Amino acid sequence: MAKTQTLSFPIRLPNGMQAEALRLLDASRDALNTMITDLWPKLDEFATERSGPAWKQVERHLITRSGHASRQERNEMESAGRLLRAQATRTQVFQTILPLLTEGLIKPATDKRPARKDYVQIKEQVRALRSQRSAVGEEVDAFMAMTNLLEQACNAYLQTEAFASVYEEMQEPPVLSVGHLTFAGDDGMKLGQTYRARIELAAFCALSSREEHHQATLALRLRRPDEQDTWTWGAWSEPITLPETVYGYLDQGALPQAPTLREIVSDDGRRTAVLDLILEVPARLVPELSQERRVLGWDWGVRSLITVSILELPEDFREQPKAPFTQLSRPVFLDTGGLDGRQARLRREIDRLKACKERYEKLITRAATAHREQGIPLPVHCAGWKRRVQGYQERIASCWKTYERRNRELAHLASNLLILLALLYDCHLVCGENLTTLKTEGRGRGVRGRFRNWRNNAQVRGELWRVLKYQCHLLGIRARQVEPRGTTHTCPGCHERAKTYASPADRKKAIDWGAFLCCQNPDCTWSGARDYAASLNIAALGIAFLRTYLKTSRYTSYRMTSKDVNPCSYTGQGALLLLPVQGVTARPISGKHVYYAGWSFSMKLCTSQTTQTLTLLSASQLRKNVLLRA
Image (cartoon, rainbow, N blue to C red; front, side, top):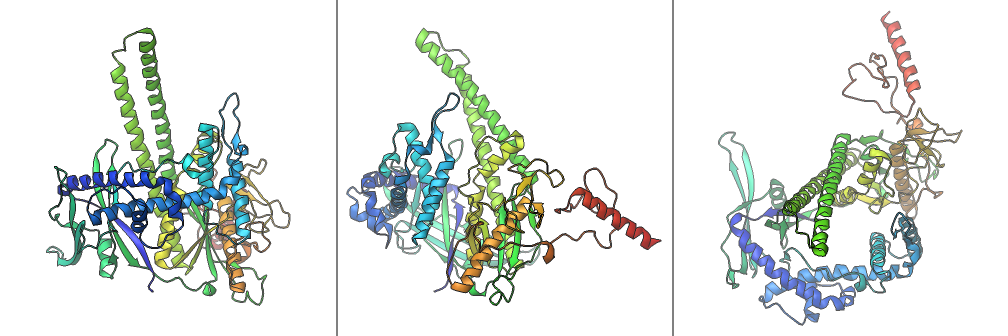
């Protein structure tokens, strides 16, 4: 069977179809919410059987029907069934974490701070449970759900002062606030009884350039309620131009799947109907793991967004199990400092808008309290205060949308770079740290510390893994998550615990978030960027996994404390930057930086050597060039 990947392309419906599509979504949302509410007490029934369409499972337990014809009801039941199945999976995970729900997960209230969750204890409890489940061969894919449910249970405890005994006590029925309807319960685009669609491919030549262009168009027709709430077929829409990417997939034989209709609500309340065109596109088969010898490791950086290193097993590793692996590439740093600065300024603007909004809300509350208790009339400016609060709320929502959009762009940029490097080095195993549950505690020290916490706690990490996984699936590359604990404070040269500092020249005081890692082992003395060291360690974890599989054909996860994870020496493998530069006249030192002729503003050399060492190398190269000219 051919390997495929499902991709979704959101298409905005024409203005002429917006009204009827929104009426269809409103009627479906009401029916769907009724189904979810009625079947919520029977949630356990959806955790046992998962074979077949979800609408068949809903139909067996449903009592009240919507009366929206057969196929329309199937679509509504399919949407409700998928949601109930997802919630039923969470009930099973909740039963797993139920023994962990104790008051030790809650920090008691103090004079300055209220009671709150103890994130350290939550992490430790989940890690211990994961180790116990993995030891007996159980699946650990629900690790993310465990952490999420544990925090949700603690939030419910902070409100009710009691832990829930069943999942339904802390989770209300997840009714929809916006319309969302799948057409998977219908009979297809040509014979559908709730929707019909036509996709046409065309080729034409431009008169100006005489180049051949390709275009794909979509025509859609919906069965929806009219203004009198009578269900009838609407007219065919005007041809909707599809993106060029869609044409390429359709031309290659991609199969269109049942689309999904949903609505998007803007900040000012405007509603827009969008059709998600779903294509099942062909994907490359992943090569056999027994043929792999290279691993790409990437780290979520402190000073850069990601740092990448690539390691390779030697050809004779089976005869020499302890043979050292080699490093194919020098470290690649994806520096997004300019965009990070914009994000930091945007977060400060959000904080300022929140402070202004809270100030006017206090004025409104104070005026309303005085009016109610003392009979004082409301101030004339009270209506203006309310308009200001509404304006601040709209601006805050707009800023958050910009912030999230930039995070998505960062995730796509980082994933594209990882895919590019993997293809360039013919590497089909990508290992990265699983930081989707990372939560940086504390408020940070200074502006940089606060923004570091903001960026670590943002959703760009989860978005990066989501994009990277489906791209790797399309291109036949394995994406593997490794345990990040200890990767940033372990020396890649000797695997001893190492300290981090603000700079390689100042090693008087070690700091937790230092950008440079320096090993105190006298036999090693490794020093370099902390992100670079972490990428090497993560790649070494991938090498250990690959080496074990090639010997035993078993999948084994490793941590930095494991003895099977070998260190990596970068100086003996050609990974050190080539200093002094050959054939280039050195430029005198300018300020704190060391420059080379012709590259003072367009390029910066990054190395683990101290500034004094670079100064000596530069002076030596300069004297050499002077003697040669003489």
